[in-house]
Length: 399
Length: 233
Image (tube, rainbow over all chains, first blue to last red; front, side):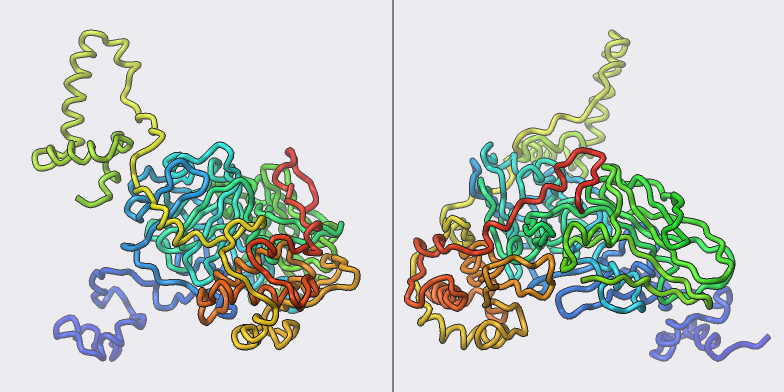
């Protein structure tokens, strides 16, 4: 049997002291792992060296989740999308405070330790930037990450905002609250108090660990099913009021011009959407059975059904949904398909428990106008399979 | 003891924290509290089960009801609130003392803003701030290129003060004095033909500036329709 130089080196390293050469070698796959002692335990795990999923960085203010590289529904925290308006601040958890004041009986300052003393809750929810649509880029060569990378799902842990609102004694006539971040944008949004008593959280945990800096460390507002921008990160202050504050983010930004000449404001709800993550650009298919799969989600609740078409929308079949189907969370759908060659267009269409059906581009434009801009675009999208198996994005004309 | 005592406290987590801490401190060097609790519980329920077997079976231990308040956090003083409470409402609530005019704002704009927003507020490269549309139309759903300026799209003049004071300029956010912010707002409103060149902007005058886009904004109603929901997306 031929013994490689690398195996000899690695074996020697076990008996002698670990030299620099051996350490460098040890990160490469060994030819036969049953013949070389493996690595010792370590304090912090790492991905397998060959696995290199990356967020797609778009300028300095956002980066998208690599949906095409992921399985299931939980987004690894270091691949959760990010979007910020003045960079990611560094906040000392020991000096962090959250002030709640305004129309309350007891204006109160909470430390991070205070927040963690309250009864906690953990829930799995998606988060999505309302500008999460890359389908107008004018290219067929876009990945699921480029098409819809600004959504991710995590298990969020924190204190129910209702618990804090009872603690400070919110006035019955308070109808809105301002949430303010401690980033350099001091980003602010006005949120209806009803959401606080519905399902809002002040989250400090993400997938079992402290929330990541890009997601608002040490604590953020989390509003299940509502547009990302309103989920104020690095939360430092909440002010109760009886009217919205009309901040820049909810007037000049994050509003939706409509075909009827109005502009919709406080459009928090993220409507149902689905995305096929396999097969998708830049995959090339070989003939045979393929599991088409992807994710679907809705800010209105659970995904009820995802329809898949393999003939460009002429016929649709209900896909299998991976249990458990959770409310306001990414839901994995799967559909078996035998690709026998030839051109095809595969598409997906989500239906949520409110009965809402993911709209087509035409439906969206009828409502929003051809000039409709970047927010709340959730059209049915598809991938075009070429005769040679190459997969590209099915482009559509936008205004 | 660290502040995370509640994590393993189980059913007693909602008790007032001071009492809970003392209680636990007494026991923690002898037994774990849960051990003590279960021993006590076993004794009580064992005796009770002997005497009233049927009733006890119906009374399994349950979670206590969450109290309205926990007594966590400390009162915020008026000074602490004032130090953070910088927001300005559409009615002008929160606007500070001070004043500024367009003439005072012009040199501040040139020095601090023009690099990103252009010499006259129209050139970019960042957000276009200046420009009205003929007849103050609202073509944004038809025409994605129509510039959403302060004059064409912003519904409230107060928003400009609030945003500039909290976030601008990006290389030194929060560095502008209140009078400078008033002056910049006056300059931008004047460039948009929303106020006369000699208008003074202060806490009284700014909320009164009429914004052409104001009446176009309507609240979103998508979430309010009944199921099944097929309203306009």
